[in-house]
Image (cartoon, rainbow, N blue to C red):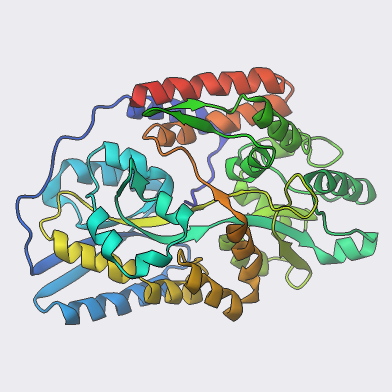
Length: 433
C-alpha cells in the first residue's frame, strides 16, 4: 500500500503506539446474525490525490450494481489514508456504525483478520470467474492461513527511473546489475556533484527491500504457525550492505538522505536533483509533472546477476467485506463489481492503478507504454511482507528504517543493526501469536 512519509520526529510516538497496538486484545466477535437482500450498503474507500477520476469509475460501477439489485442504495465515503487505522479499528468494534465494505492496504490483511473484522470469502472468491486470472502475489495479499479475506483491487510496484539526458551526456549505459547501478550512480555524482547519482532514503523501506531480496535474503521465515526474523541472515546482510553503500558524499550524503522516504526520493528525481530513483508506477504522474518530463525513462530495477530483475515489493490495496455486515451476499457482489476486471481496467485508465489480473494488465501495457517496465517487474516475480498480524506494528514502528539509518549514520555496523532489527521483529511476532 502507498503510505504517507513519516518524519523522524514521529519515531518515538509511532513506536510506542504501535507496540501498544501489537499487544492489544483481539476484537470481540461482531458477526452479523442476518443477511438482508435490500437496503443501504455503506462503503469506505481511500481518498486519492486527485480523487475525481476514481469517483467517476466507482460511481459507474455502483450505478450498474444498483440496477442489478433493486431496492439497494450504495453510499460511498472516501476516507483519508492517514486516519484509516483508527477508523477501521473502531468500525470493527462498533457494528452499528460500521460500513459493509472497505478498501484496505494489502499489508494490513493479517492484522485485520486477527482483529476479527474481515469476513472469510474463500468460497465466493474461488467460484468467481474473474479471480482465476488473479496473479499469485495479489491473491496472497488477501490470504491468511489458506483462507481468502477480500479481493485485490490494484497492485503497485517500483522500478528504476533514470535521466536519459544525463546518461547520454556522460556516455553511460543503463545499469544491468546492482553492482553496475552502484558504480554508475557514483560516476554520475563525481561528474555532476550537484546531482545525486541515485536518490535513496534511509526511511524508504520498499526501495531498499529489492536489494535484500535480490541477494537471497528474506524479511522473515515461517516456521510452523509463526514467523522468525531473517533480516539478520548472511544473505540479507549482503543486500543491506549493497543498499547502504549508496549513502555517502560519493552519491547521496547521509545528512540529506538518511531521513528521506520514497516520496522524497521521487520528488528529488522529478525536480531534477537526481539522475536516478526507485519509484512506483503510482509516481509516474508526479514525474511527468516535474522538470524532467521528456528526459527520463524507466526500466526494471536490476538484480545481482546482469540482466536479472530484482524482486519488487507487491504493494497495493484490497477490498474486504466486514464480518459485521448485515448484507453479506450483497456486499460480496459489490466487492466483485468494484474489484472485477472491467472496473480495474477503468481504474487503470483513470488513475494508473495496475490491475491485479494478468490478462487485464497485458492489455494495459499495450494501451499505455509507461506501464510496461512495471508490468515486466511483476512478471519477473515479486515479494510480499510476512502474513502476520505483527507486520503492521513492525512497519509503522519503523524497525527497518531505524536499522538503515543506524548504518548510514555510522552508529552501528550492518551486523549489529540487523541483529537489533531481528530482535524487535521477533518480539513483535511472539506478541502477535
